[in-house]
Image 1 (cartoon, rainbow, N blue to C red):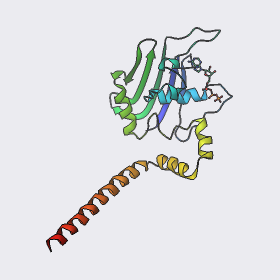
Image 2 (image 1 turned 60 degrees about the vertical axis):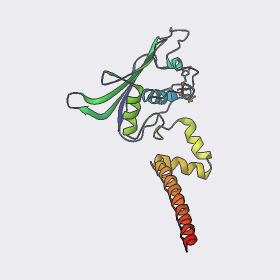
Image 3 (image 1 turned 90 degrees about the vertical axis):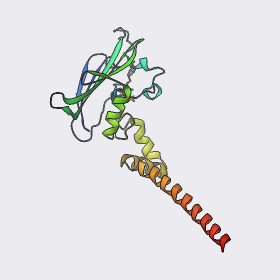
Image 4 (image 1 turned 30 degrees about the vertical axis):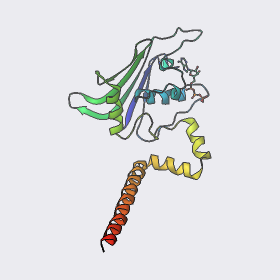
Length: 196
Ligand code: ATP
């Protein structure tokens, strides 16, 4: 899945509607301290279904709504839209996912204008091997974490990025089944020996 456009309104420091076109390939966000780089990445994660306020650097989910400044009053809602290159159907065109939160009313999701559950959005991104916790979304702290990580930790990150983390789970399952079978064989040998 390729994300083609990110649109924000009232999300954290992005009080006015902002549109960002995302081109194919690697996208880097650069800018001075406090300009909103992390807020952009958080907007992507949030629209994909992130539900932990702490991982959005807040204490409650409503903290993502523009809180106001000396010059501007706070907003009552935040909305983030992700346009992807997935095709929903000839009539519907590309898939657009929108998440909106209103003060006192919680979050709601839409896919191509239709109200959907949070689970539908998570599944849409999971099926495309991406989502709010995708290693493809690299935050600032993550880079220094990779540099200072122990070799074992770095390997785990690379395996996650290569999409082979799931193979380890299956390998563990297979090893457990192998051990159970070996135990059964030993037991069988004992039963046969008893009968001799
Ligand atoms: P750095 O390079 O220092 O990590 P950054 O470019 O990643 O900075 P962000 O952390 O994305 O910047 O943005 C921080 C700014 O967003 C701060 O000025 C903060 O006040 C503002 N901000 C965060 N949440 C809200 C909110 N709910 N309402 C208004 N402004 C907010």
